[in-house]
Length: 258
Image 1 (cartoon, rainbow, N blue to C red):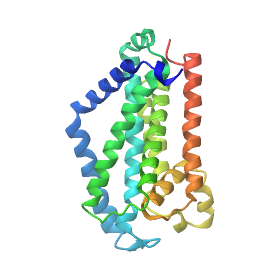
Image 2: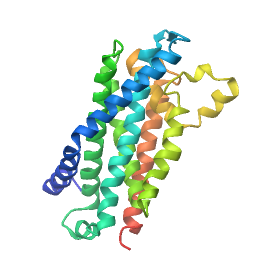
Image 3: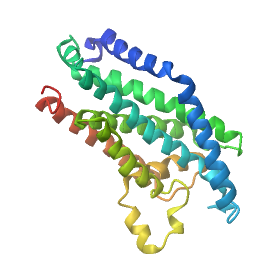
Image 4: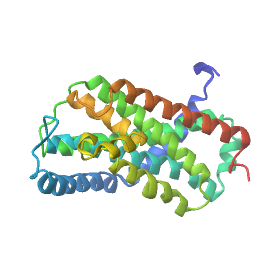
């Protein structure tokens, strides 16, 4: 299917509907990351930052900013995309979408595009909040935006997979709460993996979140725990795997048509 044959009206309708839902809770959506980010700076910046002022030559308060943005990006992308596709399943309106003159690829673009847009907006809000506490310097703005877009899209696709897989609201929270959040904390969001013992340093390299956070932090300060080429490759590989999973779900109608 070429770009010119895409049902742009269908994509826009889904995107606009999802963004309108976000607009109805805009105040809560904005206040929550601002308060949470402020608390992280109070707790981590003051309590932990007082014990060591710099990490890899970067002031600790500034060092944790990319990790804070990534933590929010992961959770918000998954939450928005999973709820966006699960709610039509829950209400039964998914059959209207499946019978509409719109392909599943176009449906994915609408839902994932809206989820990624919302999470990127919240990520920028967190950056703005962080700038009130520490001076920010983005060494590679192009790569910062690239990692932001790739990560938001990848985890929105991940959330889309969870939304299709989930049979209840409890399962929507299971993976973000019990898997993604712990992996983020173990992925160097608030410390450098170089600070870990050698054995743990090897173990955390099997955590895919390490590469996402490391690449994003490199775009700020030019320093990372993992080579930026490896981080970019792992991010793209994660995105491709998710696209293949969704393609399989579409072909088999997994938990969509029954």
